[in-house]
Image (cartoon, rainbow over all chains, first blue to last red; front, side, top):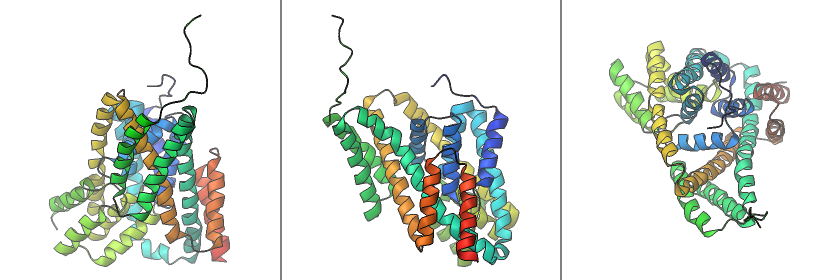
Length: 203
Length: 170
């Protein structure tokens, strides 16, 4: 645990996730990006912790963003933190979803809304690519410090997993587990080369 | 309609899926089979889920509303919020094993796979959301703004909505 982690009040957690939940129009990608930006910018989580929590979210059942929210709330304020974070994210956005369902045909036929959505949806692609780059940065720069072969091994894993996801019907969860399983022997085979000489014995 | 069975069907779908639309096959089979939902309900619910705020998994709240009103939306929300709590067990297990190099390397690989997943899903979604050079321009503009972490996401989405209106609405 980092000792300098800010400790937000339960009310701050609840209101943050509430605002984040209702302002993230355009579906899950914008919600995900908002959770990422908010929690990293406020120092609630490091980039590495965020990626790790999201990776763990992938291997449990249910909606990924709810699992991510549970882990972040739990990290910051324990059981009560996870409950207020989850309620803050879920209740208002579920209510808005139900209301929008009721008024959907009226909204959908509005040309202004249609045109605005045609702008918002491509933007979520750009946001999602930016998030992939931001998540990759600490992993790859960490590997780079361990030498060019380690960096290469990391890039090979990313590329192989991407190829499997893009060109086969293997479930993404299975590909993630395969990436984890392949990384263990690969990193064992590729030695760490530190650039600076190790702290030597005195004398 | 039996509310307990309703809750169970939604709970089961959430328990055996990992988000997004992966609970769709379960709900589709069960609810169409019982005659509780029509194909059109699914199409509407998925469309609302794409547009409405919050995780896209909330499309099943929309479905619950369509077939059982506010009670259905409430039950669907409860069904969505319970199974994710199991992630705490996964996380607790991981924290106990974290110091093992084997477990550390394994989660490092998982994290690398998450990067691949994010990039691949972006490209796959691009196929159904970007149709011309204007869409490409909006996506690249959003990418550039988002890489500067100080620009609020809501501002990027608002600019994108405005660009959509200027490009396609006039």
